[in-house]
Length: 162
Figure 1 (cartoon, rainbow, N blue to C red):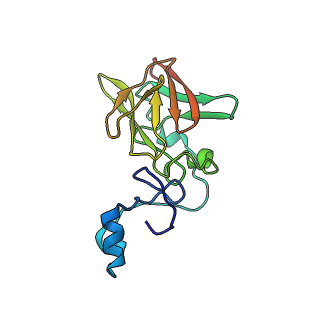
Figure 2 (spheres, rainbow, N blue to C red):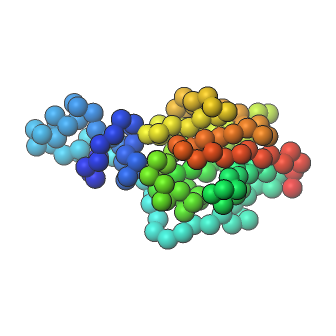
């Protein structure tokens, strides 16, 4: 990790980089740079990326994640990352230091429906108050409450294809 912040998660909540273990810090102290051992491809684009209608697959049910108090109304994109540093929704979370740079990912699986997967976030993701295990897909149902760090989102699924 290059930014110098510390934490207990796998990713830094400030820069989105991987956190260093004690062994990695020891290697760094032996005049070895972290970048020689670890590289994480992170595509960070400056500016705001909005979800355009061309990104939305109209052959699958529409998923929305909603929080009226925070003025959040996300329309899900299959494969999209939720985070402060990556993904089409980053502008909604960029000011929230509790949301990791790459926090979670949404997928649509045929026969299963919409799923959410925590991506080793520092402050966790919960589905109906049950903590998600990193890299394990959990099915989203209409009416569920998805919590990304400290942000509660109501799951709204339009089961009819658009």
